[in-house]
Structures are given as structure tokens and as C-alpha cells.
Length: 146
Image 1: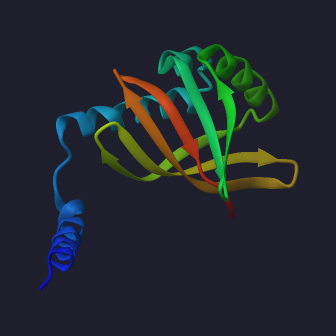
Image 2: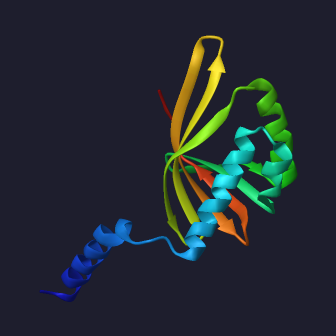
Image 3: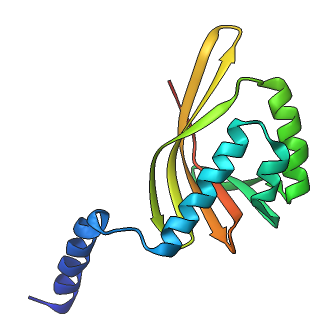
């Protein structure tokens, strides 16, 4: 068997066994930061959300091969969330699943809100970068409405 084939099989073996491994301490800490952020968001606690963000926080959206900066900086997040919670007072999100690798927390996130037409929800994949106990960046992938 050639070296690249051996390396590929070893990599596949590691990936197949990876979910069974326990989270390391830094992995657990990163996930705890994302969960605390989500709790503050669901309480519509704008100050609590902002406390979870690094001063240079960046919120990015991905679509196809494009990346758009939605909000840059904790103060811009504050202004955005105040408007958002006024427009959607029933907004809340939940983590349906999470995978953690060091500072990277990948979640399947479901947003719920009440509209004039009734309850709404949509799901998306988000990747949070946690540095020094704060959210540094988040990348949101396109939503799937349900």
C-alpha cells in the first residue's frame, strides 16, 4: 500500500472514531461560552450578549462562494440586537447539535419566532470562534426554513 493510501486510511480511521472521544477542557469551555451567549440571546439580554463578545467581534454570513460582514464590533452588535428584538420580540434560538474542536464550535442552530402568519422557524449551521473566553467571530451558513 502506498504512503498516501496509508495516510488516507489512518485519517479516515481517526475521523470515524473522533465523535466517541471525550471533549477536552478547552473544548468544554468553548462550548460553555456559546451556550452562555445563547442564554443571553434568548433572554433578550443585550448587555449579556455584548459581554460575551470580544471588542473586535465580527459576524459573517456565507452564501455560495461569498462572505459578507454583517456586523463588526460589539457596539454595532448592541445596536443591531436592540432593533432586532424590537422587530421580533418572540425571537429565540436553540442548539440542536454541536461539535467542538479547540476554539471552533460548530452548531446546528434553530431560530424560532412568532409572525403574523403564525410560528416560524429556520435552521442553519454556525461556526463560533472562541478566544480568551469570548466570541471572536461567528460564521453563519444559509438557513433552511421549516
